[in-house]
Length: 316
Image (tube, rainbow, N blue to C red):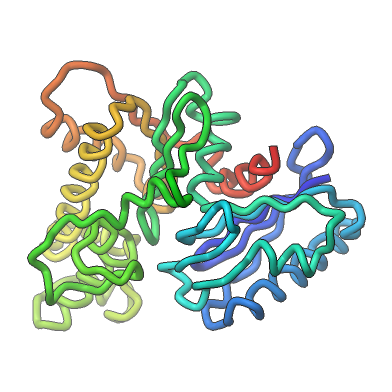
């Protein structure tokens, strides 16, 4: 049997698969952002064993564990360099640490969570009919993973596709500092977390908005409230949403121009929550794209399970 683990900034999802790679059980636990790396992965292993016990199995039944991490990884070394959404996970030899804890009897594969999900979509999901694909996550953060000839392209060190941290604006010294330790990257303008932060900033500076009323307080404002307020033509929400869509369209167009890949598969909380978002993105993308060759914008077929499917597929 196999386990796929999808580690995110707010939750960790576990999937148990049988010998035919069929998903048979799932489990979720909240992510403890305060834990240092060793304690974080000790808890991960403890929760995994409790999950197995609840399913009637033991660690001895497991042949392999695949893990997707929201991190810059040196793939060959199995080393976490840094993690924007989990700042305590940095400069850590995650593969060696887990192998020491697990012993040599279990196969272990670790990669970026977007890479894992991309692998799931090209093998099992929306990208099955394509040779090349860019997987795009639009959620708390934004990022991409690249499939060429149906294989992951990782680059020289392992973090190819961290396009959310490409710089979009060089003249932004007073802007929000992203977890990548730069200001003005696409993530700092177009991710759910940062867009909500921008809305809070302008409201705290005195602009009128219905957002605090919808959310209960300024501190509680999320993208869910921003989308709802934008539908009600709230000026702050409309401006924040429009800015986010503009930066996302430029981000996608830049990747298309660089890679000339015609299949984009989208996933993430904002894509799943907003039915019209893909259509709006495609419209803005088409305003930038001056050629007539078809470019497919597809929604993930695996949804919030793409991470655990992909983590398991890393083993193969």
